[in-house]
Image 1 (cartoon, rainbow, N blue to C red):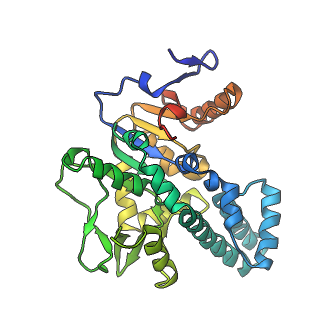
Image 2: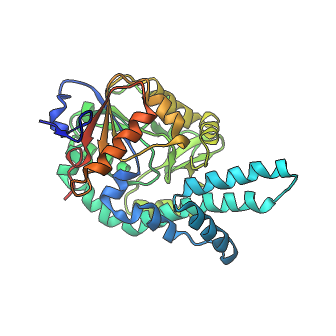
Length: 339
């Protein structure tokens, strides 16, 4: 029986949803990474940011005034300031420079945490209980930049080595016009496999000579070392959608072959959708619009010490985002098992 949070909101466990005979899709947000290690909390990512002293003094004021260490929110505010200046007949190149520096800082912060924890989290991905939690899903869409889902999929594919229909693929299987240590994005495949889509890019996805490519896991080198080599030796910038406003996010997506391909797959999806680890907000309107096309939507809520009031607030936030949809709320702890 579901747990009644109030007269209109019930909280189910995953095994109460009766989804066994359906093709189900999964949308992952940063809560998935935080579940594995809390170094991916916004504050901890911000602590990894290493700006110049001059930039840090300005960003500290911005953090203090906004009350947030969310990189994307800080970028949003800087973009607003930049757009207001012409109305006051002012100009300030510093804002644009700082915007770019914070954006690059996000990449470095995610990379730093990812590299520090790579061995620990790969060991967690060897936890079969965790890996088995991916079994119900036909398509996985992720908003995360880190490598954890990729490690999980590699592990799951090893477990189901003899059953192609249980494996995942991500359309990065081509090998033309890209370096040998990359897989090239190809927008079709004829295999009976399940799919992963990186909706906002990832640490391991890059563009090269108009091709979109993914760093491949190689024998004899840790994956994070391979990525670090791309960042530092080749000075390549990963494909990240970290722009502050919803318009800029969508503009970035529509100008990249892979991102628009992945987004269109999400936009046109009709399977029941489980949302895990993302609260979403006005900056994610393109994601909210795509979710609106689904007829069955299940939203996972994280239960902090049986605090019904926080669960109700989170549920109401989602109801405001999707006012015309019937939402079913699920205890996040029942969706993924992590030891």
